[in-house]
Length: 265
Image (cartoon, rainbow, N blue to C red):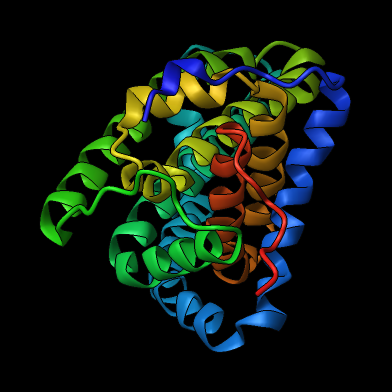
């Protein structure tokens, strides 16, 4: 499939953003249509989620010590100023931990539950007309590619998170603008991760994903940010994961201008 021929639609950016968020809602609709398959998709997310919940709890427990460790320059300051700086540092650490944690959780869960999520993604595509030019990829090569691509995305997100962490110390901006940027960055990388399976079925890799989804960035961000915010809700990542995989299949079809209306049989 030629990824370079994909172009962005002419609708307004705001409209496309909310349309992208709506793809997650359509993915949630599969709970009613295919409850058994979707609930099977919850199991890998639940298993992975327990480990990441423990990691998050550990971060929260030690956040004060970590905040002091990254702000040694404040040791000699007044108690009020030092406490304020370290509260800001703690919030920045939790924010970056959440960003990297959500992306890492998604990467690990997609690997652990690969057979389930591949089935969900494939069923969505079949429901809406199938995958044009589908390429059969053996399980192990597909898994290796998925792991390699996910590691790249998580690594890039860590690099992006460093300047966001530093920006978190800027008064007002760090507590208003930076979280919005963090959600947008997290949403973008989440969309890239979740769209892996439908792109592999088309014989396309990570660079193709970036190029195709970038052509309609508002829609991609709308979907990704919606997923990201849901993943921040307690147990949200576990319950939403199958719907996010389904929504990513729809996002991919839309990016290639393929039908996302159900085929009547």
